[in-house]
Image 1 (cartoon, rainbow, N blue to C red):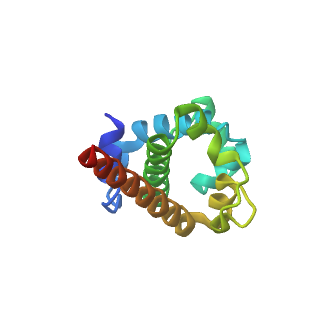
Image 2: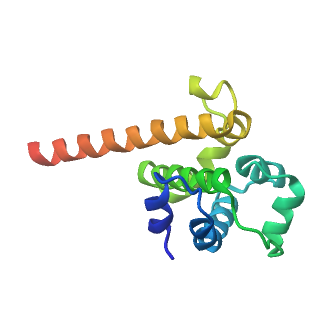
Length: 150
């Protein structure tokens, strides 16, 4: 299963057990990949998923035997889209560093993106996804306009 499958499922509810079971392994791979790229601490990884640190530790160590519930799958799908948007906006190394940097962005209130998402939960993660995807769309529109004017 690819990241595209998880992205495609983002708009669905993730409420049925069949979907949750089908997406369990890809969701774990995606989340561990993001955690590695963003250099998340255990507290941050747990916070982004709404996990206890014990559950996060089990996930990281390969002892995870559960499936993600609807809330957790939604979080993973949103974080994947955020990660993808960052990689469209910035070179790879900067895209991976940016979530940890404290910026002047007023949306973050002096926090890093990771800190703000842990604190704000799903509503803020959705807001972040919308903000970044809008930025990607604007960049593509500017790029297309620049190509036409050449």
